[in-house]
Length: 631
Image 1 (tube, helix red, strand yellow):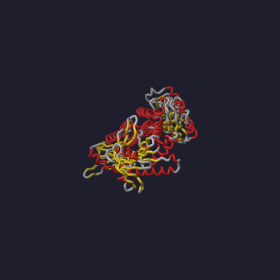
Image 2: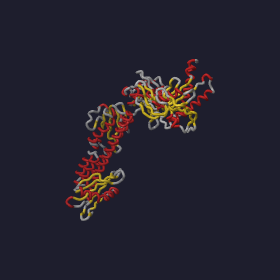
Image 3: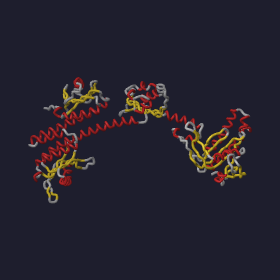
Image 4: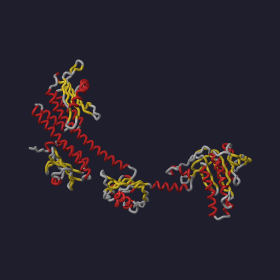
């Protein structure tokens, strides 16, 4: 006749209470858990569990084989030795069905494992009652061990009880670690004797654990001292755990076969309790890992700089991270669990709804899609979107994932930079900080070469021609001048009417051979203008007068916080300007300082020293007649 198993006989209230409390943390604070062994009967104190829900769940899952979820809650059977001995009941605000099934199945397996462990423990206890007078002590110890779910505390309890029952002076529990090596996990007794006992008995314990057969060595001798050893294996039907090693019998006696049988029975109970504790520790670790992972993922989504939005297959928003709140100016509590097209209605006039529908229906993926919505508050945004389908393990579509970046500031900066490039030298614009407020006003003192070139005869030309033609002709000559400057690694400092000022070897564009680059630029421009004259009307054939000077100047931003320009200041600049004023049409004048640097690479005509405006002393100057080498 098959015996009827009673769940309340198999599980301790403390075990049930501890497990329910731990798993409630996984399911949420608004979920009530209970264990029942019959309709309307709850094990332990479960006054918080709705009585009506307990009856309804028993009626909905009388012979269930897995988790059943109804409007009243969820239930899953507890089976031991092919018998259904009860149900796990859950009511309240449950997690999504998949997560609820995983959590309740884990709790079911834990309770069933504990029940099986209890059955095995009871079987051992019944067998021991028939054979040994010490069975009461073993059973009591088993009850004590069964209530201990902390592995370290349990090991110490096992060893303490074993030493007291067998009356051993010292002992140790040796367990296999992850590498398969046997190490000491708990010990008791005088330190020096204990260390010697572990060292001497390690080989014996390893053999006992490996073979599964207990051994007594009463004649083991260490020098002049004889130490009796008793080792029994710790194992379950599933695996080998290690061994219990006792050394030295009280009152100088030896270990007997009765001690061996008694310790073996104790070790079997200890192994079951240890396996139970390890199982519980593993479940708790998994619970902590799941909780940690959830917390970690929540933090990741919260800290991602990009906005992250996910929807389910019904277009309901399930994730709306902190960056999405900031970008779209919508609190997450107003977005989550609502239809995305209601929350993001202001995106209806953009391609966004079509993109979401295409991803959901056809599993397409979109990357770097830009849309330009206007927020309900009136603010214009530029958003970069990436969309892809959320898929389950079986490839089924679970929803849509949307990642968005606010590129409004980037687009604004690009527009501002493009605008600046129309008025400032490109070399200067490329080196401007992203925040123009970071530009300082202080300059840098350094050796540079300054070039001034002025279009001769332009005033007369402008007086006799329409303004539109004047501007076109001026732009043609200045375009050639600007191109020649940039080609020879200089920067155009400014255009002054029909003149251009260029700087070589500035902090913005350093150039070691700045004097040579300036001279070559002037000669290149002179040749370009002469070639250009072959293709234009005679009245448009204008010439440049150029002055070049090398020396020390202060280069930097000049002006105020409201308006500034990048330029050079100093006598070198003034002299270059005066040389340009004294140059004839098509003539290039260079200072003595410039000539000293490039003398081996140019042909010049020395000119009589002149006294330029603003200087008392005469200035030595040279007319550039050609280039000797272009290197």
